[in-house]
Every structure is written in structure tokens, then in C-alpha cells.
Length: 229
Image (cartoon, rainbow, N blue to C red; front, side, top):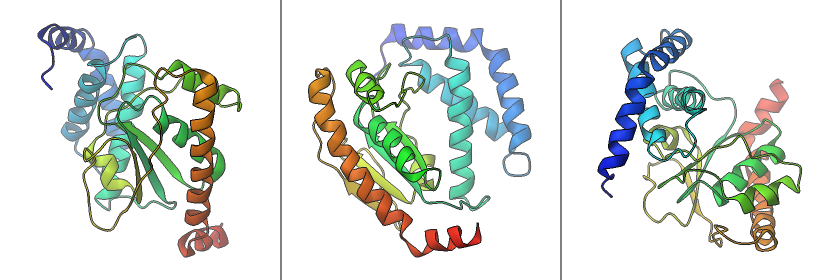
């Protein structure tokens, strides 16, 4: 879908206004990934990430901070997919359309179940500007605060780095690579639903997440990691 002219203009304007700040972010990440990626590669990822997120961001105050966080995650995923760094735990990616509901709930719930033994990411094929309020409210009932989370675009690097990719109503937008485990979870979309309805979806996701965590953490590789701890 073509980006409206007004949105493209605003994105370019924000980019120009924050060039110096984005350059500082690039320098920090270039130092972190020295010996793995050239500084030019890191800078490209930072500016590309900012541009992608600026298109949908409703509130831009924290955009540089979220850009640094997401660019760091993308570079880490890219390094893993290229074999430059090793991952000691399974990596799971949840994908839905807007990354504002189902995939965010699944990500938060798997982080709870895994207790650091699984690396979890989420993304959206057409990310929204913010998380669905009903989702945030339903998760807060479980003591999980999603107010600092934000919708992220689906990128090739995070797919390549993942061992398991779970899709939720996003069709064929997620690229398929050999050697990965793909599952499609058929779940109702919580967007715009009252909290009572979101709870039902949340609980169904939780049951699926528990089964997923059990299957990954009972694998031989996980047993080996725990024995080496």
C-alpha cells in the first residue's frame, strides 16, 4: 500500500530533525557490534528502523529510544542468522497483522513461562500506532505491564534468527525459510473488543503458550543448556 504524501513528508521531516541523535545511536551500536558489522551497516539499520517506525508512531517523543532498542534487536538477530554470534536459547517470533494484540500477549506470556530460557520477539505485517487498550487492560489483570511495549514491523532479519515462527492471522506475509518450525494459531482478533472478550482470547493464547514452552524447554538442546549452567 502506498504511503500517503503527507505521511512521507512528516517522516522525512522527523528524520532531518533527528539526524544528529540517530548518528549518536549509530555510533553506540557500532561500538557494540564492532568486529561483527561495519559502521555503515549499523547506521543503515538505525536510519531504516527509525523511518519504518516513524510511519506509524502516534507519539514520537520516545521514538529515538524505541529506534535504538529495535535496531539493537534487529542487529542481534542478523548476527545470529549469519552465524556471527551463537544463541544459547531457542528463539521464538510471534507475528500478527498489527502487533498490537495477539502477538504482544503471546510474547509477554511466553516470557513469563520461559523465565529467560527462550528469547521472544513479536512483530506485525502492518503495525499499528499503539497497542490495543483492551489488550493492555487484560494483561494488567495478570500483573503484566505492556504500557512500554510498542508495535514493531516484521523484518527479514528477525524471521531468519528465529527457531520457531508463530503466525496469527497475517496470511502469507511472513517469509518461509527451511529448518524453522512454523505454526499458525487461529485466534480471534482482540482489536476493539471489550476486556471481557479479550480475556477469553488471552487465556486461549496462554494455554497454547504453555504447550509451546513445554515443547521447547523439554528438547535435548534445552536439557544440555541447563546441565551446563
